[in-house]
Length: 137
Image 1 (cartoon, rainbow, N blue to C red):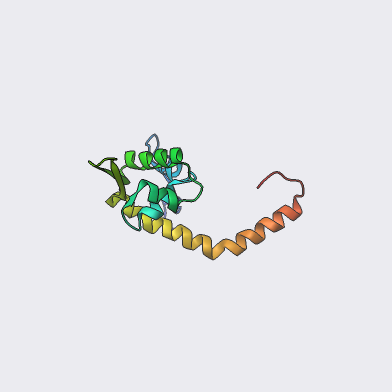
Image 2 (cartoon, rainbow, N blue to C red; image 1 turned 90 degrees about the horizontal axis):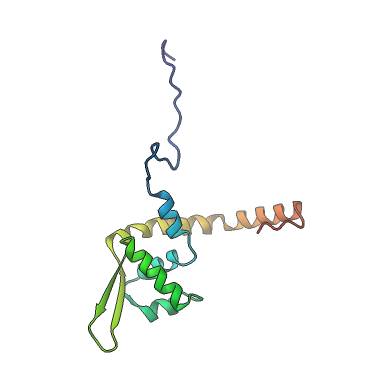
């Protein structure tokens, strides 16, 4: 090390924001960390879908939750909504370029999950055996 070198070199953190700056990570995690958004994005990555098609493709989602989910994704600029002037009105949903840009990240998370599923399941079994009666699940 050179004379006068006093700075410590540290690796850049995985997630960082400058002091006092909202870098948006919390908003993104709030959106994609909910129960339905990723499933809707995955389905829309396959192409344009009508509301009922989305509802059938995402088992367990209620009409209200699907409505809220696509509206939130639309508000964030990830989904576009097109209303066709028919009777009854037909509505199509599709990913925007911003929404499509998320799909490789979701795929990476899915690949990671698949690769580490057995290890995580084993760790959970070991932890549960070592901590009987715990309410952590």
